[in-house]
Image (tube, rainbow, N blue to C red; front, side):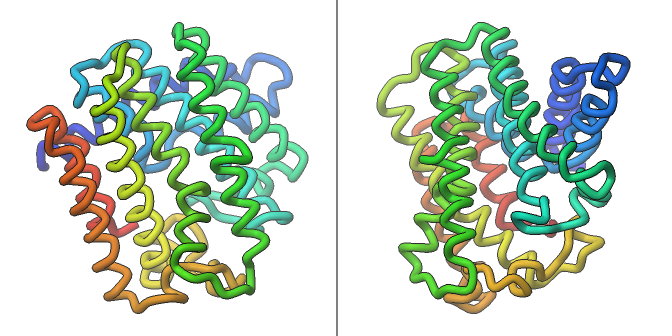
Length: 290
């Protein structure tokens, strides 16, 4: 097993501990809601966003309790978004991370409340760890109408309509990229003061990695099967969603993702060896199979 694979497993384990500690126990009322929250948040997922948070903290020279809280918070927002995305009124999917989606396992009302409660928990874990107003505002903007929710709104409005590359990138910079940017900047901010050149480099890295991640999601949705992905394959094409594959071939899309990763690696070059994990994550994004 490679050093990066070992590090990945360690980060996944640390994230699991943070989430397990943060989420209410199933012995507390309302038990069914708490059970459903733990069902969707624990025991699955690649944890790419927590990895980015820890890697960014490492690039700045920090790894502390606030870093863990930042990683946990951004993952809670991500899981909330997946829970809501899977609802019949959104993407209407019945499989996520290799198991029935929340509204299938429980019901639609519970899934809606699970997403709401996970979002609240994200800000609770940040606040309890002593995060300042700037970090809390950063996550709020990333999750809101100028970030992830706004990108999802554009995605829904664009279904069945052709988008050019600039329009598609605008959508994904918000829908996917905003939370990836937040993961990177929250992790780096857990060190305390973040110098302007460092912030600019990390923002450019995050933008490139976010686009590469979405391009590869589109490629894998077309190339992989449901068992490999852990979610329904080919769903985007079936629903008439705008994807990178509506604008370019699979080979062109892969090349475009690699170009984004190359730009990301250039952006973090000033961090030297401290930025190694950020570089490995970028390469993982274009090499992953699920």
